[in-house]
Image (cartoon, rainbow, N blue to C red; front, side, top):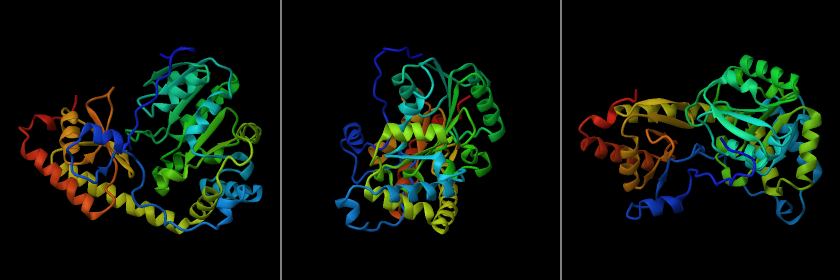
Length: 351
């Protein structure tokens, strides 16, 4: 439990090559970074117009981005959408939409939600019991979940949103990986529903994390409140251009979903062939839960292949997708070397 006023430490995340080099200083480079759930096949890069860099972002261009995002995600209207430089900056602002009280996060999940709720002044706890969320003033669910891919049905979430609305609370549903999740589970179309905020991430599915773009979908009055807090020019000019083009490119999105499904199946087969059980995930990352996960993390790290490990759950790992045939071959060789030294103990599935 985190209490108001308690020191809030930074969260350790994947994707840090500096940390990888410190952990494995003798590893061959370049690292194969599988520690994030970011698509290794990014949306095609292009040169935005020079004015995207030399002029302040135009309000009309932001309006176009909001309209394209509403259509892509299935929100009711552009007035239900807030754009920001990444969802990360939105988390404490969203948590502050309700008066500081008790926050419950459906766990285990992305650690920044608990941290953001604490920053907003809430007393924060984590729970594995979905039904317990109704007792909170602020309830947070990541759907599909990171790191295990758990999906909560739309019906259960809407029922919870109704209960939160009735008492002046708020349900936050983080759909950062819903681009590759079951679309029928998305609450994007319910963004006008009171007591509900939906978050969507741009950088993960489109493989453009450095562009920094994320969205809140919610009722119009709440969207206006968040837009007022962010102020003008919250989204950079080049980011506007990438967001408008990529979110409007439905053909690329559909083709990419098919590609990622194939890649995830290949990764599952690669792990299974070396005795590593895959316990869940999405088509952007796979979740591993077995006895000697820490041994696998270290063995691959020494070969310059970085998985995501969790200090609080040492028996679990998350693996992203290799981005090239060379990376696939390096992973295969490293897994083969690890398996050859195994006596069978590390492959036992956790009880």
